[in-house]
Length: 133
Figure 1 (cartoon, rainbow, N blue to C red):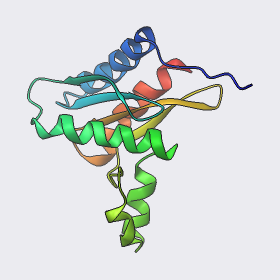
Figure 2: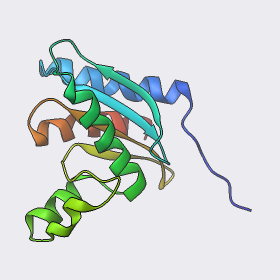
Figure 3: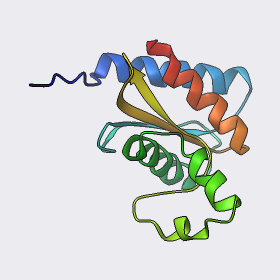
Figure 4: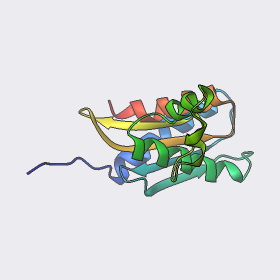
């Protein structure tokens, strides 16, 4: 039998706080979504000044990272490299800013961020994902 670590509200709160701190330190108005390993929403926070669509995009980035077990940037790189078929993949967004959350090498969820430049979204997501390490 295998054993599985799951994200609890304590960990989700820590992830959101770390990501929010990174965003606020840079004065970036973003939406931050945290999902479980199946891509199901656990938390969403849209900072003041972030466009409403950011909440949707952040959730999709997180879902993509959780289900794919990799950063959403990998899919963006594939599309930019000519694999345009990934644009029609179900449950997948090919936008940078979704990062898996790992505990003991196991994907337990993911964080997605939207609202600023792609590399800035990813910077915030990494801050959140790495806070449990």
